[in-house]
Length: 451
Image (cartoon, rainbow, N blue to C red; front, side):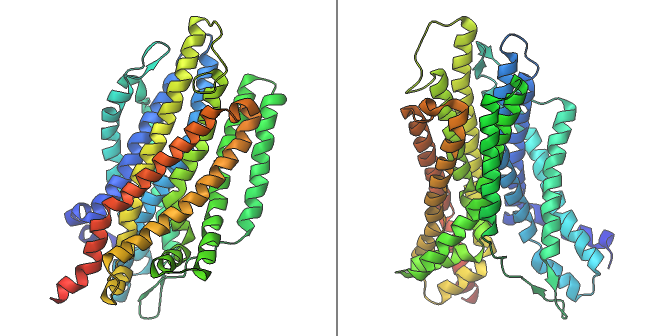
């Protein structure tokens, strides 16, 4: 029972065309297409010349820093989705006598092949996404769709990075999989989220705040200022990832103690089952709120939005710069919303399949699909409201040294931030509603089979 003989039996046409397989491929294709276009657009700004070229490159790097963590979160969620499909079959293989090396090889290769299919599909779809985005004007004229496609070496690096992320997540899943004496798979309880995350997050946020202040006060050059500002933004987003998980778990523990209905208790227990997974479902909106704070501050700083700095006479180059900052803000937020929408649908569909035994059991015990759906909505929306408030506050604190208190407190900043939060929350809520039929089918499946 060797790996070369078993691999064709597991990686089949049905494995790719089944609902979980298609969902996994789509989960990798969407972030790949977005990543290729963002990488190509960033590279295009580094090929520009002129007086404002350095500033354009700096703004492109800031946009990439704002989108980096959401991209990583979506990619990791896609990798976890592909890993969930394998556990039962790996247990069966172990029961039949397959060696640990064979099981490990299958556990790594199957998700990697599905991820590879998604990466290829995303690379093919990237030019289609670049066509409308290439019409967006910068410096007075459209960039063109070709400018949004990265050069060969960069494209290869981006695609390889997605595959490495998939392989890394699969490897972590292998380490967490244990096989008992009778080769029956045993799931370990979700690891407890410890309060040490608050200490690490606090130290990292302090470092990000220092970098933000240093970038505006003691930076010896524009390049150093941009590097420090980008580091501060990326550091703040990482802090949210660290602290957000703990906050979601702490809120769920409190709600378990004061639950007043079955839906509330099911929702709180669902979050406590795996706070990291609960965080992943709302992290997109939290990071979008964080991004919108900087976007609104930037718009107010250059006078590109409500509450701006005014309209003093400007040269043609300065007019282009103001317009392009506003365009870049909208593009960054638009890409964030796309990530949120994709994450919401994929995460909810994957979670339903992952907990199908639970939903089927609860339905058999008398819980109707309305109650199950209501509990699932609470599982997502209650943590969402908490983390977006924390994300917005963190963004305001980090943006203040960069843009100044006047830009941070401008009405346009708050309008853009609140509007982004509302749009992100609506996208997540729509994702929950779109997967309602999936939940109903999973919950009722045993009843149909029995009949």
